[in-house]
Length: 195
Image (cartoon, rainbow, N blue to C red; front, side):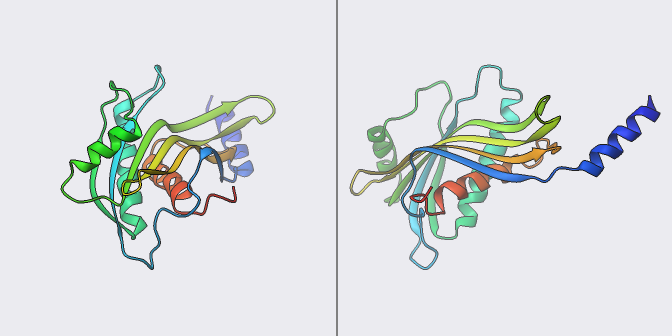
């Protein structure tokens, strides 16, 4: 068995895949970045939750990775003054925009932005077969709503599928928090109108 395994592993290492990132966005992505680093920090309240598929493996592990990724994104943005990161229970329906505005009004600080992040998929993926022998990587599937409470205006209501991987790429769960952060940055900190 060992003699067969070594040539296969050597061939895979030789062919070693190159990971690339693909982003698919639908709905109404933000027309401009969430905030600008050369302007005063925007006070922001964040609500987040998960809506996993029924057969989701290790939902608690993925939920913890999602939270670390969200927190990493918020810290890394540098132009947000986050007044709270609140977890929404998975068993309850997602709040409407009006409910989000009421929830944010109950916080101590006046929020200039309300951000809702719903994580639907966060994990490794692996496809074996035709046309590519092995294709893998990680995937983040999120829904995001962004509101401006002063005007009750919806600044974004978008869905994003973020993937990093490619042919002969195999990734586990170690990068999930970084992947979550990168997906949020791609959606919220880059100008999306041109997509």
